Length: 265
Image 1: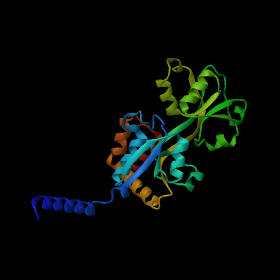
Image 2: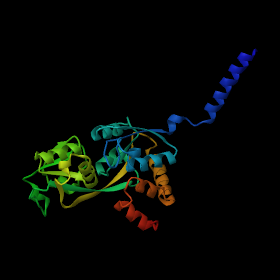
Image 3: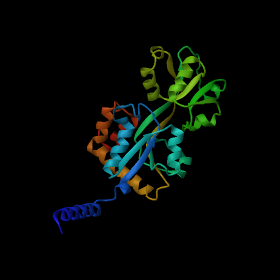
């Protein structure tokens, strides 16, 4: 056996040993998806935003590598429901979604409000009083239950930015939107937006972001369990607080209550 053959044999053997001693990468790899929902998660934000960073760090700490893509929300949920994605970042809880997703512990809270133009005289005490008005909503979004039950006139837009533009132009009378999203879009939008809008009434709901794992995966419960353990470790180590501060969400109501409950802050 010549030197070249010996070298080749040694190389093949070393690769075999590495392959046998290294866990299958695909077994610990997850395909994750989300919509683009700044300021919570977006490909245009630092580290893809606070909810994205919380979720992916918890997954990485659980031993999973992630490959993430951003899609419109309807497509992101369809991919997860059909098992073409392993999990979706930023899923709000709805009972019907339990048919196809297992939910992690919460990642962040968000207030859902109605936004109007400041020159509008719309006021209400009950949602029924809003029957005459056109209300912009996000296509495929999970709206507050009370809002759904009120059966108001709605017009679905492809994004919150589109709905805000419609509101500014008077094509809708109100927009159902996350308060943080509204503030973000107003800050980044045309200068005319700065003093054009205001919240009307109290928040209609407080929603919680979760990581949702596709039930098409046989190990969906294991992934959620590992995710929750990692998130809990991050909470107690101070890492969650570091991430919240990095993105300007240190005063998020869910985490303030959670830290107080655990005596961590």
